[in-house]
Image (cartoon, rainbow, N blue to C red):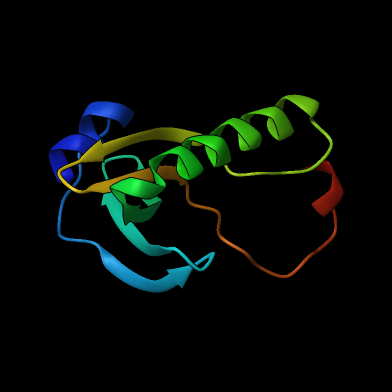
Length: 102
């Protein structure tokens, strides 16, 4: 998985990922550490590759609309019997002064 992630994102990945549990009902969620910081990765069966590609397309469309903040799509691919979607990691926190301008 590490090599496939590196190939589609252009990033280097270190230690094995931290599991974040299930996400969206059909995918496992992982946090991978890269040279550019953490990356959120959804991993599903190969049969779900089209669903992850559709999610990537939808996120790109939402980002292009510039109406709501969505994670950047870093890459989407397959390795063996698994499909994956790599996204920008977003740290959530409390809203503060100037949050709307960020």
